[in-house]
Image (cartoon, rainbow, N blue to C red; front, side, top):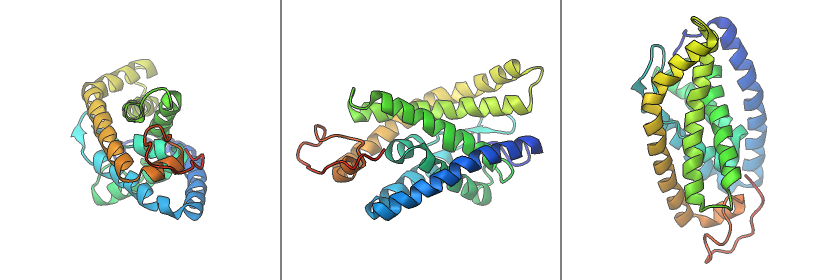
Length: 231
């Protein structure tokens, strides 16, 4: 991951483009709405995108046609939801394909489906399940870890679907096993880094996090801002 240019058969390129395109279009609508109603969120949106870009650029060789790296997709999912993160992921992946030869244009849909959609959706679900039950720092750390892992599980499924040799189950086991060797410790490190950044944002701009509704006043008792109910 990311799946390199020309690695997927054309049918699968089109399939993943269509699926990802639907979510990205919905995400663009949500992103425009957020920026119109709350322009003060723009720096935080840019930070979430930059975090994803930097972390996912740190690639390591893993398996033919792919690589392993942290994803940085949990932060955006917790702050703004999976749909907006799909848009950020598409932008990040497009720039990496054009400027870093990381991923590709034909595989952009597949790569965004794994790193921009399924991973963030998993992280968002973990966050929703843990929110209010444990400290937000621990919750976002676990959200980031699962967002990373699910990204690579999805990539393994995509590769196994494209190359089910000798069958889908065997191919999935092969890809997932090779990814797991590097991705399990990488995801834990990514979770710790995301938690560190989260605490810094919470210290610097707790009012924004309160307004987004991702923390409550018990975590920042000296700050009083009514949450707007955002994700």
